[in-house]
Image (tube, rainbow, N blue to C red):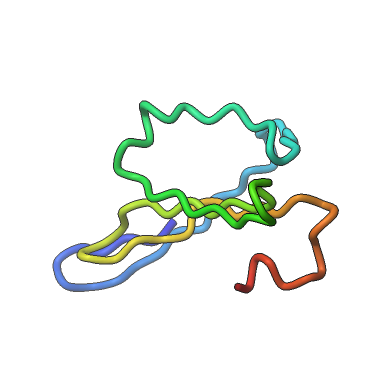
Length: 83
């Protein structure tokens, strides 16, 4: 966990081993878009077919961070996410 307080950066380690791991398969995720109003969604398309999705969320100061990046398994290893 990264924090910025009183002009100084700091971090804390937090283990997540007790949380249940879940898996979502693109593009069938169930995002709560109403709760993500401040997010920016960027899609990658092959014609009219959405093959990838990047979600950016507001972060520190004027920056955004990459919250989620998914590519359809049929298009992986083709540099879709890198593009």
